[in-house]
Image (cartoon, rainbow, N blue to C red; front, side):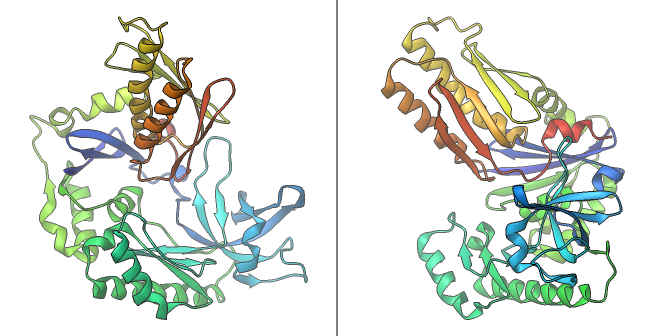
Length: 398
């Protein structure tokens, strides 16, 4: 698969476009001004204070800044790193502990923090609270077993290691060197936390466009094209430190007479990704409506010339809709609970084929996406891990 990244600065936004085999498959957007909404980023690590405990939902609320309360799952308490402890209960109001933002604020929902902090590198992730040695399932089985065998000597009671997909193309020595660096960073942060005051930010996550570069799968990456000189300088510095062997794929695009958004039709792709309606080639369309609780995707036959009231016509529209719904979910970064209302099918075998096809396309998403079930009303339930705000929310943030 041929991959490209486009990064442009426009309308006070920095947008990253992920291109696979010529198609834009993901759009990430963030404020270029670093305003309040961008202050508490995914991955930031703080010393927080317990402001409230709600036993009936198994949760607590932890302040990471005066007035900024975050949701905290009480299951994390067993591995908590306290900097100030009150009382004998596992968690008490007033306790101060190290937490990391695991989910950014979404609409009216507060950010989520965890005591199971993690440190992400290019090839590996160090995890506090989970001490297992894991390897990405996208790495060939023989290499997975080799990594587990070689890294078993690193097993300990403080942290675990997850080997990322990018390690597939790296030498074992390079991966091991990164793990040692992450381990040193981990112990330094835990040690320094004991001397820091409440609400201290122990580690700031990089801007989201840098995080995108750190997390993107480089296999097949032909070029990273940047349409802004200042951004190019920052990204070039990042690559010099983190990925010097990939410096040659960086390109500065500077042609005012024919800007990047015209060359790759990025504005058109963005406008379509923010529209409620997504057209299908058969003439049908999807209506995509995010709500506070979930996202609903309704499949309509629209201008489809085949008999949509027939089983064959409905199946044709549904099969294309399954592919397009999976594409739109990733493109728009929809997450949480997603309900898809396909056109009703009478034949159970056709329903089975449709679900099998839909599951196949969902599996291509790099973010964990699960087809849960189909209800008695014929509604297909999907869940997708919440990592960052969906595109429509990022675009609304000034």
